[in-house]
Amino acid sequence: MSEEEKLPVDDNISIIDHTTIYHTTKWWCEVVLGNMYGHDKIMVYQWQFVQSKNRWIRKQKFTVNFEKDWILVKDAVEKYLPKIKVIS
Picture 1 (cartoon, rainbow, N blue to C red):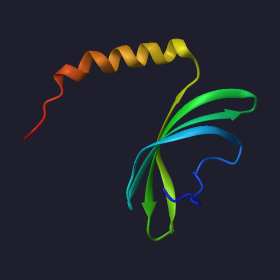
Picture 2 (tube, helix red, strand yellow; picture 1 turned 90 degrees about the vertical axis):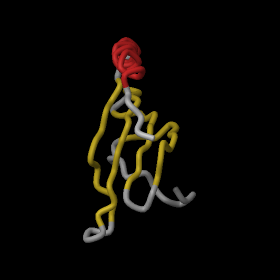
Picture 3 (cartoon, rainbow, N blue to C red; picture 1 turned 60 degrees about the horizontal axis):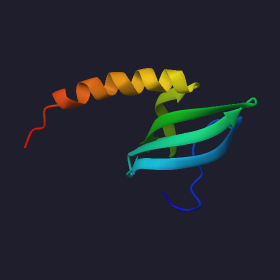
């Protein structure tokens, strides 16, 4: 992401911090710590660049509102990590 490229999030979200997971010419995944209406949230976004509209379009968004929710998600994902088959 270029220094000047603005994250394509809703204008009501005040961005506190963010981390790029990946960013290509077609796909962009970002973890955003933001505040919306006085409540801090962690949001994981995936956008696709749509050439015909010349802009990023949100394809997926996952929000973590509370630490207890994240613990449940993290535990569930970690349970399946050993089952991922890698094709070499």
